Image (spheres, rainbow, N blue to C red):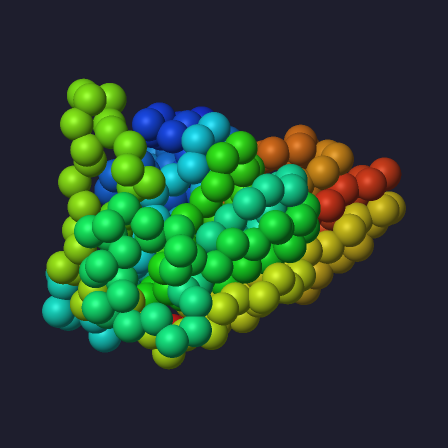
Length: 272
């Protein structure tokens, strides 16, 4: 039975060679969220809401991430793994990479990886705080040094590492690349993403709202993920400070109260 109140979660941090990511709302088996409030405290979100199918993260990249691509609904049948479409909202200014230069073909990708010069093919974006970049499965991408961003995605941990900037891992050896699966996964017809403030796709929608005073929203028919990007806000009796998240189950009305807060609202899509 779904709860009739918003859910908060215990910290769920994952360390990486490049920095840290917090899985702020998750049902994924690699890091399931544990409920921290109400009568369900201590239970796994996957147990309580098995039909929730998104993963929300805060990524704090001290160093740039590898160049990656994820499979989509079509290519996942060829490569294995779980499809992964995601969206980034910048929490500060920084450099990201998303998309390949027009005319790039598979032979170009293979040659650039082999020659250690893949950055020649990548589109570099000087992204600004609050900008949103849609990263569908099949789009080549990377997060730059010192970037902090919020990510909402399908509940998947399938990542194919295409290029790693000619660096080595913690053991002093080059990290494994997944070139074959990457080449199958890349969609060369995808346009270069442009910055937006919101986005919609079959799996989720994303909005940003400013709260100054109070505002109310009628109950939604699906899950909504909240993230407070600035300020703090009272949501149905729960105070969410800057950087905190919550999950709103279907059918729960929302009332926000704050002197000022900037809040992200991600709504689960109806496609499965």
